[in-house]
Image (cartoon, rainbow, N blue to C red):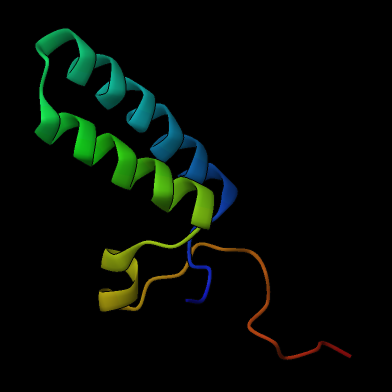
Length: 68
């Protein structure tokens, strides 16, 4: 998997994951817990399946081509 999420997107997803985790505890919801875990995975792996499908990339790391 190629990284396709930049730092700003990762922080947003991490914050959203924390919110979902709190809501899953509050409502005792396994569904919200699953969404929280998936959101944490996206933030930590710097990879988003939706971005992969639509071809979007917000990661500032170059794609292997060196600039000279």
